[in-house]
Length: 393
Image (cartoon, rainbow, N blue to C red; front, side, top):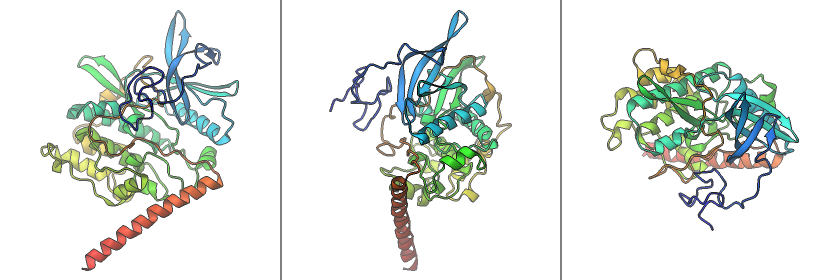
């Protein structure tokens, strides 16, 4: 197996890395000439180069002529797929992002269908993801508070509009930096609403939600996401608590290597207090309290909202600080589908950031989902039986 990227020659970071950390190409895939390079889409967006590829299509760097200048954009293309399910998901994501106007949510510029292709155009941000930043080492507390505050406000906007992200993770949080009187300031952009849940009375939600489907990234999924329960905004609060834990310590509370192991950890294993971890004994008590509250197993016991979480985490003044309202002109970040390289050092699992692809509404997929639930359910019953037996001894 060739360990280098066939497109740009970058070495594969780890044996299980599927995408090149430099150009985003799928490793070991044959290099082919992309006919879209150099073409113009929707009559105004020139395709410059490939940025990455994901489950929902390919992402390109594009340029839009604006007078004598040009604005860089991220162009996401589903391609010539005839799968009605994928088409509706693509349209749905574009509609969700377009409706969520907030400085900390990626902006949707345009959407169209041309020559059998489905095209969405978003702001392009050349900086990296929060996952890459975490991989660089533990951040100072002020930076953690600022970033988490902006994520919380983005989630609050989505939740107030009835949208639950369901796949919040560091790779879906992109960062730009702007200069102000205090130096460089992080600006957060929450991206990738491909499996977000819209309001329950939405026609698109009724069409695309599959009963019993596991949706999300196992390392960041709330316990109720593994058991086919109805989910609400508190699944995003749970993921936000995990992200806060990871930003402060450089790791997740648990390590696992399969969906079943992640399900067991989220459902039954309490997270270790941050101050019990070597090197973090002096962690602020308010950080620990806020994160453990957000990571409660029961949604009813969990922090009720993203803003409540950041209020507990910061616990001083107004959590809606001015840093979150920074506006950028033609901001630019890596696109939503651009995968981040794995952080160095011990990892929670072989692939903790891989999302579970939502199954299509077909009989075979439904059987696979039921089989998975049967395995998880059997595991849960076995653990419960052992706990009871031990308690009776």
